Length: 337
Image (cartoon, rainbow, N blue to C red; front, side, top):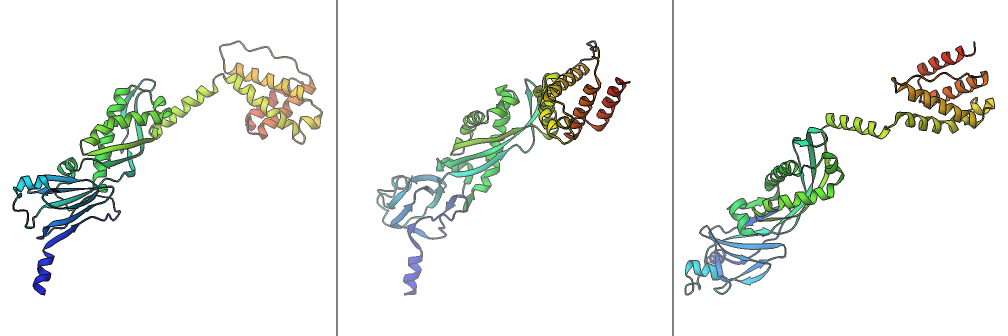
């Protein structure tokens, strides 16, 4: 009985792989010194392929399904070993299973900024990151170039190679496109499509298909981003005089509602608007030193008081500092003497 148990253990009747979900891409069936029994069953599940390697040579690849391993189902192995008549006995061959599931949510990014020449900003350094997904399509190529005779080859082992491959392609893409940084940042979807087309052939060289690639962010290093923010801010402000008038005009309704403000003194909204025009003109002139200063218009006591009240409201809203208010107050009070 012990002899029969020993003999049974030397023959393999069923070959299959139940993936354990740990990111394994390639797995070699544990053969040890055992032999595959003639007529044994090979089960290849969906999202898998199986490959026989005999004496270092890829012999046959099996798609998902269930197979009986006979001379008819192993034509290449039969050819290699000339087993058309001797196939009645068991045989040995390395059997590898490969996962063809889509590997999702894989992250890529530039570990260091990429230096490029930008049309608008000159020489700049860019950062970019995002996610991608891929799946194995050619087990023979993957075996020959990546996994080899390893018992197990995981997704994590491949991650660094794929990421560096994409970053290298990204560097070339930045340099070849000539697209300004602003346009790249504003069209990340289109940029991702172009990058996918650039990287797909590199994945194919490893027996992989690049399914998707998303650019989540394109940015400048912090010190360059601050300079860009300042430039954007100046462009948004544009005509400083109009900007100032707009700010002052928006503050008038709130200042008029304050206790002790223009409403308490009986000053109407018309006077406040007049003040806004005066302040806008004054600040606009201050920003244009080459233009001659306009002659100061005479002001009545009521106008001076109303103006001071308005300025005080701007101080409360944080538009004017206390020092600016004091200086303007002294100037206006001189007009009453």
